[in-house]
Image (cartoon, rainbow, N blue to C red):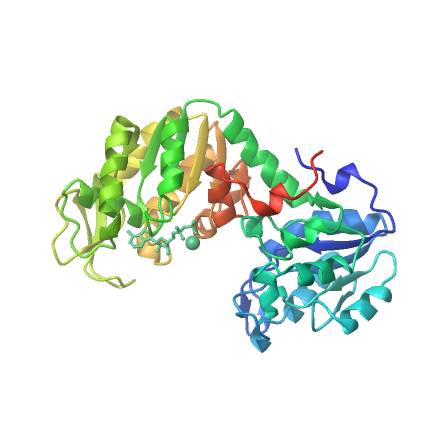
Amino acid sequence: MKKSIRDIDPTHMKVLVRADFNVPLDQGKVSDDTRIRMTLPTLQHLLEHKALVVCCSHLGRPKGKVDEALRLNPVADRLSELLKTPVKKVDDCVGPEVEQAVEALKPGEVLLLENLRFHPEEKANDQGFAQKLAGLAELYVNDAFAAAHRAHASTEGVAHHLPAVAGLLMEQEIEALKRVLDNPRKPFVVILGGAKISDKIGVIERFLEMGDSILIGGGMANTLMKAKDFEIGQSLVEDESLDQARSLLEKAGEKMLLPDHLVVAEAFDPQARRKTVSVGEVPPEWRIMDIGPNTVRRFTEKLDTAKTVVWNGPLGVTEMSDFAEGTNQIARILARLDAVTIVGGGDSVAAVNQAGVADQMTHVSTGGGAFLNFMEAKTLPGVAVLKDA
Ligand code: ADP
Ligand code: MG
């Protein structure tokens, strides 16, 4: 277990909090504040202890230079509303202006630093840059689970220069995911989807060892179907992964369930003509967009017996409502199961929210890459570097 802010007394301490405020913006406003809300318990805990709170985050991909559209000012505004307290904001994350602002901070006040990725040193995990960040505080708190698979200056480097502990969100993520991996109640059923199989070979292999059944849909199933010599028409496919797909199929045997019934469309378009077909009957000019009702039924039979379910990756093109039905139905099945249910991945979580059942899951992870790496039992640099309890 990792030490968290509950294991120490942060009273009147100067605390650097690495949060994940990588939120979507629309016309200079935060259009979805979920990620900000997730870090509120940590910030509120620190403020109750009259800590001096310095928050930092990345936002988008500014490529190591200032990008006016990716300043954190909208985050400061929203954070201030949610905390019901003023949030000060500076226009850089290191340097004299920042140091002065930190000096001026009083107990129970919050300062938000500028987008860390305006500096190329952030992603490079530059030691000097990490030291400058560390110099701003007496304690480092990492609450950015979703960024913990990256060894960047603010997620890893800084922790070598300050006492480093987990925030409450980080702690909750680690505990929830660890519980599943260490001792999953059986049967353990895994659902995998999403665009590409090449992103997720490692996860599939890991779950072939741990899981009792793996249900596969989404774009990644296309490569597996092609590897079984089924016609997939114009569907998204990764030909370079066909050999790996064949070896996975061989290893998996009965454990892996592929779609046997599909929704296909004439074009990759929300308005496209569509129909349902059995596997092997995809017309050469059409493409697979979703799992069909018979597949949902077959998957549901497996899910009904499950005591643990882990899900990553939509089972269809959920951005287009006509092709979100399979994913929606599976989300609603999970919601009514008497099982531990864990969902992770940006698009998967969006789909579960869309279906209105997020609060009926045991745990909805904020991680995408971090979630997958954790599931693969890879070391997350941002977690490894925190103090052990
Ligand atoms: P997550 O963000 O949950 O990890 P991914 O990013 O791996 O999930 O996958 C989500 C993407 O997969 C979506 O953009 C969705 O459109 C795409 N996808 C799912 N099924 C298909 C399909 N049959 N054809 C093409 N793309 C698909
Ligand atoms: Mg995604």
